[in-house]
Amino acid sequence: MTDVVAAAVEPSDPPEGPIAEEIRLRLADAWGDMGAAWGVAPAIARVHAYLMARQEALTEREVREALGLSHRAASLALAEAEQWGLVEKIAEPRRVGRRGPAGTAYQAIGDHWRWFGRVVAERKVREGDPIIEVLERTLADTTAALADSPGDPDLTRLREWLATFLIFVRLFDRAVGLVSRLEPTELERAVRLLGEVPDDTILRLVALLDGLPDRDVLDLVEALSRLSPASARRATTLMSGVVRTLVR
Image (cartoon, rainbow, N blue to C red; front, side):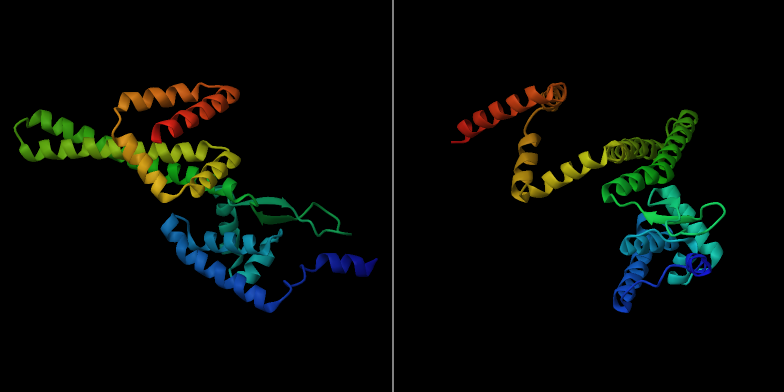
């Protein structure tokens, strides 16, 4: 019995294969270096990459010892990674024979589309929304200043630029927000289907849409969005046949 309890108290065996572990650590370091470009702290990105590559739940101690982090740094990184939706906290799976409350372990979110959508949503909240607030406030300040100095050409140009730029940022932020609202399976299918369409086909479609009036395109999209799945299948089949006939 003593042997069983002692074995349970010890941390998990080191990952099999020193070469594989070396590669995992190199990946974690590279992922951490790229984290800043995504708006994610390097320590969080390292923890995320290492847990993904390990493909199992690890305790805070195992993570910090593998990555050479302090207890505080590892705890903060794991907490932030959980907040970002990159990892999840679970009961420690290796507690055979141990008494007391269950320990805590962390594992990477296995569905890549799921954590990708969460990262997009988190970045929108942390970056996109605040940028829009700053631009709206700056535009309001410029408009007020222009009301006091209506003949100032510099203020007029600045207000016109701010108004145009704000439209662009709002459109981009809305597109990002739509990505984060998709279910992981929906996002995966959309990206997978897009990946199967040749580049030339996409470019031809964009050129075609560019030659159509906006109202016609919007009406078509609105009509398609209201179809039932069965009606959409029939409409797609019919439309494909008509288009093939027209291009002959």
